[in-house]
Length: 248
Image (cartoon, rainbow, N blue to C red; front, side, top):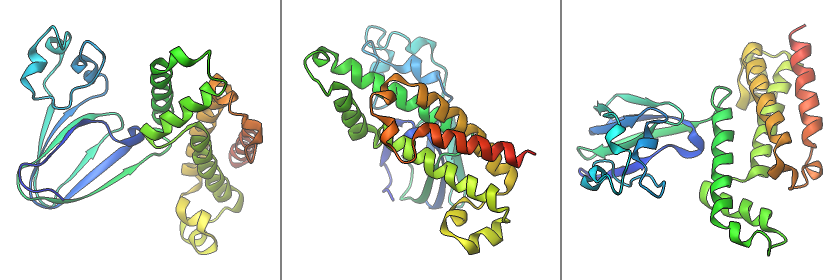
């Protein structure tokens, strides 16, 4: 909820998720940039602006690439309308009237790899910020995970657990061959999946690709992943087996 004149600063949604926003009442103006366009809006230190309409963006000594930027997509959203924001699209939003909206964010098989890329970028940024203490802190890599989580809300171990829950839900669907309606009656796990077999296979393939990359990541290896339950290699073997069986 926001009164007339309130606004949301320039940002991309949490974990680079998809989002939709439905206006119950009121009117909004959206300024939206496709992925990659935000790079032209960074200042000389690499930081994104708080307000993309601020006059200082036109100062080339502060924002050297602003002249290369393109105009944003502008949307006027009325009451009863829904705006969908694709993964990774930066945006700034104004309440032109007193407004109430319902918003929802989600990650699925189509953008989970984007989420993983985002987390790698965030960790790299943290590592750059505290690199001067790398040789003097025995748990430097763990502190990087703590700092990343404080900023993004998740670390690499929690991302693994996220992938595990998604994979186990989809494997359950494939192994039990329930329809969406029947599966929802049998267990909470199937109910939150609510997928057909082809959708479950699609999500498992995308999860397997990201999990393979996570397993090979040097920063993840430093977190003793074999102590996780189940170990990542065991989960990867199980979900690949589930995919192969479903495709027979």
